[in-house]
Length: 183
Ligand code: ATP
Ligand code: MG
Image 1 (tube, rainbow, N blue to C red):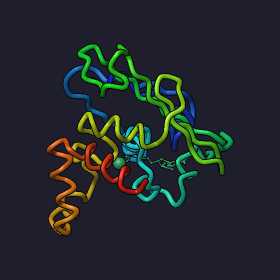
Image 2 (image 1 turned 180 degrees about the vertical axis):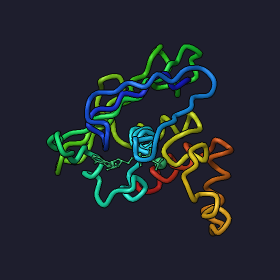
Image 3 (image 1 turned 90 degrees about the horizontal axis):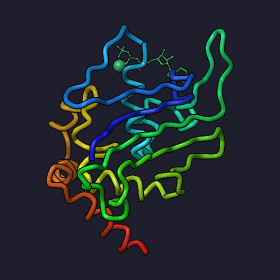
Image 4 (image 1 turned 30 degrees about the vertical axis):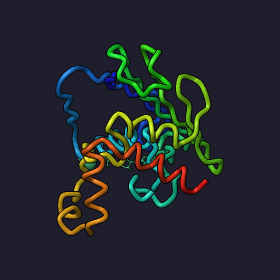
C-alpha cells in the first residue's frame, strides 16, 4: 500500500480544493513561515483518524474548518481525502480487492465528522484500524511532531510501550482486543 495523493478542501488554511501528489521516494514540503506546511501534515493525521483537537493545535475540532480571512468568508465544512494505491495487495483483508482506496473524512460545523472508505460510510475505528494494520496512522511513530523527541525521553513506561507496539506492528491487534473487552 502506498500513499499516492492527498486532497484537502476547507481544512485550516486550505480553503480552495488542493491536491498534493505523493510520488515515489522522498517528498519535501517547503515554504515561508505560516504558509501551511504543518497544516498539511495535520490534514494527513486528521484523515487517518486523529481525534484529539489539541493534537491539531486547535481549541475544538471545528477549528480545523477554514475560519475566514480578510477577503474570504469562513466555511462550514472541511474534507480531506487520502488516496492509497493497493497494487501490491497489502491492504488489510477487508479492502484487499481494491486497486485504489479512497479514505475520506468530512466535518460540518457543530455536527461532528464522518468517514468513508471507497464511498462507503465507516466508523472512525475502521479507519484507525486500517492504518494501524498497515503500521501507520495519526499517532504512528513515523509522524514526528515538533517537541516530540523531548516528550519521548520524559515519557512514562506505558507511553513508551505504546511506541514499541506501533513499531512492532501489533497496535492494530491491541486495539481490537480493547474493543472486544469493552463490548
Ligand atoms: P512554520 O514554518 O512557521 O512552521 P507553517 O508553514 O507550518 O509555518 P502552518 O502552521 O501550517 O504554517 O500554518 C499557519 C497558518 O494557518 C496561520 O496563518 C493560521 O492563521 C492558518 N490557519 C490555521 N487554522 C486556520 C483555520 N481554521 N482557518 C484559516 N486559517 C487557519
Ligand atoms: Mg510548521
